[in-house]
Image (cartoon, rainbow, N blue to C red; front, side, top):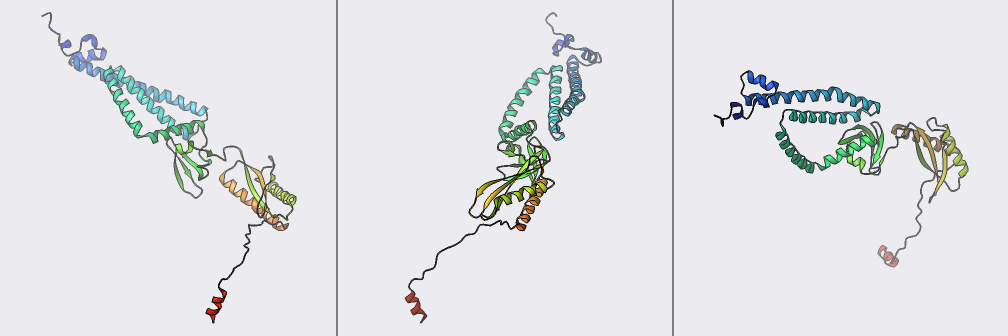
Length: 310
């Protein structure tokens, strides 16, 4: 009958629609529909494996070598490599869907994924904000692991122990571990005293108004020049910065090389101690604020008090 459908057409498949694998499966006894489904599944697996292996063993090694050439820190490479692995997996799945002719299914999944991404994005605004801040930390490199940093106007400070795409872990000088959202380190001023190869320190020495300013200045400079960890170039200097209620402020400015928090505290402590000892030897006073209370007490109704005493 001319209007009758062939078995292949009745099942939704035709011999022309099948590839080599489908024809072999049909010859093995499967129906055209079964052969077509099995063929698409085989194409999906082959395409996925091919693209994934290409990305895993070709693209990823090339990317890691590029990171090494740019001297990117190892801690920064780890999250970036994870993102690339996820992208390779995503591309492999997308290509596999296309190779298996699952186009309609892929479009439906894309719509569902877009709606899900919008819902997740609204629910995870802070997480995404910190993630973006983490990306900027990796690209701008305001600090590295091992750096001593201060933020929130000096409220917090410590040594960076770990940097991830969401949080940064900082060890305080009291040995407390702070887990800091990355956005807290990018939304305000952050101080990194050890980013350069040297650091200038300042300390104000207060001397009495009756003391010799030039003699005190010479002592401050000499002790800076004697300390082995204070740099000779730039040379230490002293400036008169304030006239206080009880003292004259002489600000010492000196530099240390390859700074760290430990070097900063130790060097400044040793230097200030040495200057104080020299001041004591040469009779230079370091006065402290003195408050003088003037006035008297007046007793009222003294006659009544005397009568009470009798």
